[in-house]
Length: 208
Image (cartoon, rainbow, N blue to C red):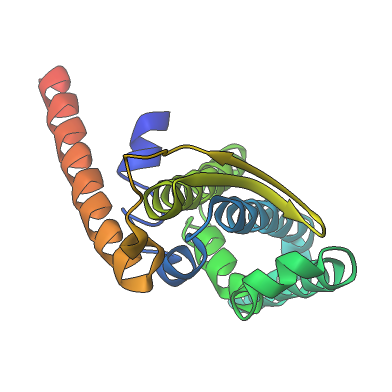
């Protein structure tokens, strides 16, 4: 499966339906969206690396519980670091920061255990990148439509923001609301579904 097929047909949000609620809740601005996606990608890779080192020390019957324990540990450590050094990020992540444990677990556990080791890292990386790119794209799209700006980074006393839409092209503030995000999600999911079907037909034609 090509990189494009992984990003479209196996997209964790629009293809597999994972992490929908953080996408809808945290993608009202680009900086909150890409930070959430980056944390998810980092947790996926940290969880995969830790599990690779620990899987031989536990029987396969309890490996599922070990996965959850490892990912919860990394999320808790990440929460402590954000609490200490990035309090503003903690404020906008809110309750969704602890819920990243479940979201990351789903992204990591979707790969079958019998996968060959050399493909495990590739699959985890593609899933994490898919989630990162998706929530970043939705965040940028919603912020540009709702406020006409693109916020790259917000720190205490400093914000990096660009103005994209100027008058007379006015922003549509409806897309900053949860209902606007849900409607946008529906249209994007339909678009991803259409592209996945088209790519599948092209591949079948090439094989035949």
